[in-house]
Amino acid sequence: MEVRIEPCYPEIDAHESRVIEDLKSSSTQPIAEPSGWLDEEINRNILVTTVDKLLNWGRKTSLWTETSFTACCTFEFISTSSSRFDIARFGMEVLRSSPRHSDLIVTAGTLTWKMAPQIKRVYDQMAEPKWVIAMGACGISGGIFADSYSVVPGYNRILPVDVYIPGCPPRPEALLAGIEKLRKKIEQSSISNKS
Image (cartoon, rainbow, N blue to C red; front, side, top):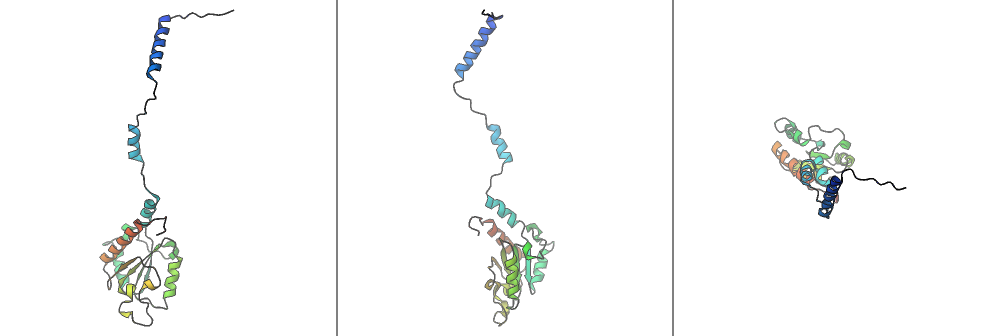
């Protein structure tokens, strides 16, 4: 036995059928998604950068400093650390007592050959990447004592120096300029070539 159901409202069914058929005939291609809101969200919430830029930003804004001062340049570095010149803006306000917690060594003053192995050991204990600033005439070339038998004619004889800051002693402004040069060098380095 076959059960036949008669539509109760044949005109409504015919109308729905026409609407569906019209929609099917006009929907042959997919409608493109409106992505205007997505572009706006991306521009507002997503930062696109490289690993180099991110690492270099962190490195240049938090230089942890180890010092090797044997003479009068110490006082100029202390002046640079004061509130007038404020090296805290570079993340350098706390001087590290251990080379294992440092990535920058600021060398200044006359270095004797007897002290050179200890300075080399301090440098070797620093973690990579590491940088060296030679501050003052004695740090760069041995200064007025360069011809002495016991004086190292510049820290660059035992350490790879990244930035030289001339003067006897250099003023705090010169030290700040040297720090800024080092920050620019760090900003341009890349992890791919370990420079």
